[in-house]
Image (tube, rainbow, N blue to C red; front, side, top):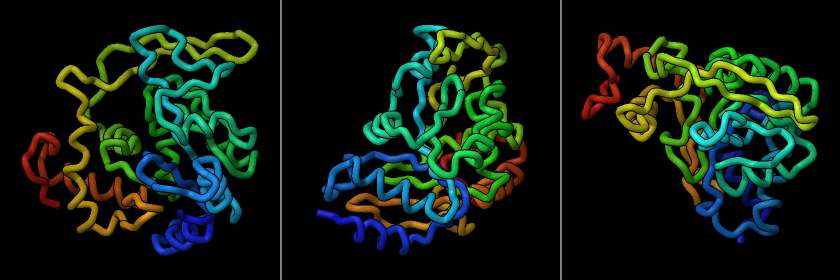
Length: 259
């Protein structure tokens, strides 16, 4: 049974920044037994990353609705197609949900800073626009924390592809809508990921060794689960080096990557 003190000790060993922005992708089932259960675990994480002025973000994606309805984010409902911690994040009153039609986040921390962080999400044209939260992760010196999941769940890597002009988006937009609590709808043209050849995020783990070599990620444990702390700026810089090396070829189609 892990206590609050145990989790904090593990976090301190990884050494994440506590005054910036951290987005956590997670599989709580791999964390193990936490005293107080998943609600207590989320309490610990929110407090740890916000007490010194930082923002802590939990993805609450709804991309599974894209082919089922044009209203892909209903802010009057607490729906996400992700796991337990995202669902619990939606139930908390101290978080603010962004208005991204397919890749929303719940953001915890000082309210005015959180509102500034998510303000562009009302105008994004892609799920992980460099102008939105995922792009700000780079510009504000933030990090991605992977807990019990690997880089296939690292949504930030999609944003880096956009920053570097890697063609992974569909050539035509989808007309998707955000519905507000008062019933108003805001329809937008959103260019979704091109998955005509499959979900390319399954290949993101090919970057793992290069990220290690470049010092872009640090490993540790949180509870029973493996954890990776990824520096957003270093991740982007490393991918830029990889793309230059492969001179226009898609590195994800290579059997092994060299930095």
